[in-house]
Amino acid sequence: MDTTLPDSGTENPQQQYLNLEQALQTYPQWRHVDCAHPPVVIEPFDTGLTNQCYLVQAGDKRCVLRLNAKNSRVLGLDRVNEAVALRHAEEAGLGAPIVYCSPQQGVLVTLFVEGRQWTETQAQTSFNIERLANLLKQVHALPVTTKALDPRRVTDHYWKGVRDQFVVIPPRFQALRQKMERLMLATQTDYPQRCFCHNDIVCANIIDAGDRLFLLDWEYAAMGDPLFDLAVVVHNQQLNEQQLQYLLECYLGYINSSVRRQFLSNYAIYIYIDMLWYWFQSASHPGQGYATTAEGKLDTLTALLHELGIS
Picture 1 (cartoon, rainbow, N blue to C red):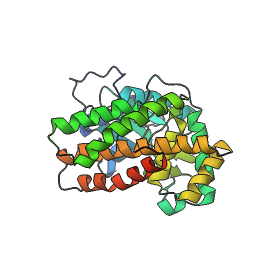
Picture 2: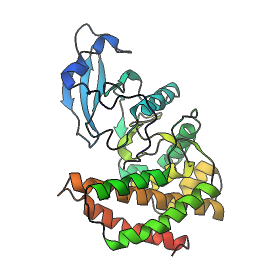
Picture 3: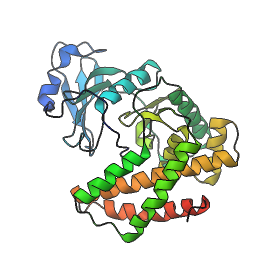
């Protein structure tokens, strides 16, 4: 999911990002490692839509080197804001230590965090739900950043991108737009609390080191509604109703009708953003099932709006 945000950094959009060979040559400026020669690539990780990642050996340390994909700026990713978020996370012991970070060059290097990524089944246990709730509390206590997640601007960006790419949107998707505009505006007014949020807490971004949890990929971090972060968790970890209730209880210590409505509102907004992201991607990545995935989210969103009394 791409929670596209307005650019707040100082990146030069005309500047060319470094390639892998050039990025490896920045090693004299790297922290936390001691290497007399350029690092060696051990293996590439799966390439995502916005990044290319490599496991590299730097002296006696293993690191993850990330190169920003060329469409990073098109997708609205603010790498300068990400650098700030990464520093906050490292200082709090929630993220991987930064070895080298240059938004202008499109390069990020962090120490490789030893541990295991959760499966959905592992994420759904009561023990890990409680651990994740405590992790969310720590994330939400991080220092304020200048970046804010505005769902209305995010979705406007996607609608524009979809139109610009001449992607055909079924009429039933169009009918949702006015309903969601009203919901996003009401949620922003009714629940003004904002805190530092990760906004992409999926299993792939959780590293369990045994005695503690680390979070990866802080590129979507911004100020936002704390229950939006919980909505991301519930959707991506496929928590059922009982597990959702337990997450809310562990995080807040209580549940009432207002909390339930705030969560459901954020859940609907997240599904809406996620759905439009898949439509946005369907034009540039045809044949990969993005349009089908987007359509599959419609039933979930419709059910949420019904529970919220939005017709």
